[in-house]
Length: 195
Image 1 (cartoon, rainbow, N blue to C red):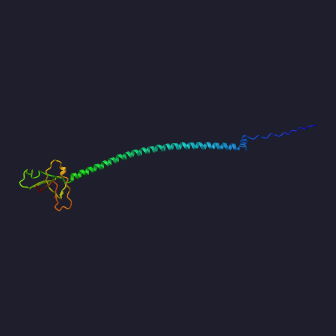
Image 2: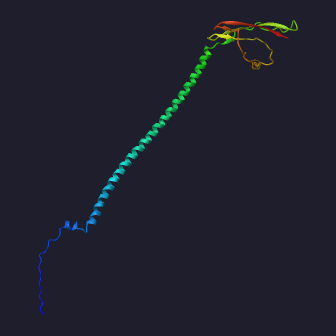
Image 3: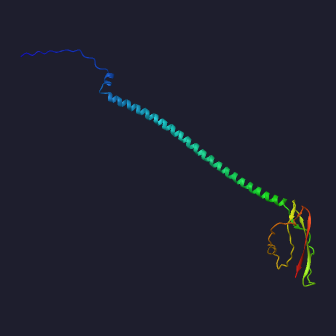
């Protein structure tokens, strides 16, 4: 038996280049994942930069808010002081008005002694009549109108004059009213009967 061996010599084909092998269909999914990973890393880095910027802005905003709260508290304290000053001014104005009213009003005050200076200590008759005269002077700056008056006397057991002077102001129209100008003295007289 005879065997024939024949060899076929084929020239060597060029080997594929590295880039050809890299981008071969078998490696395409791996390349896609690599590119996706790189893009993800870039996006993550950009996101971290944005988060850092937002954190800085948030810190600035928090500081501005704290400053605003401090300014509001200072304004509230100033407003409280202004309110107190206004209340004090209103009270002072009210007090001044009261003082001005007291200064400008008519002040009717007995002037001089009551006539007679003393009542008799004995009776000449069962009923004794005395003429009592009181001089009233207007010490105020404005005229006063005497609308009514009465004179009476009473012997008190003590000096508590409040018990005696709890009289009511007369009511109604006063046809016999007369003015008492500032600085003028008027005499008022009445008969008093002591029985």
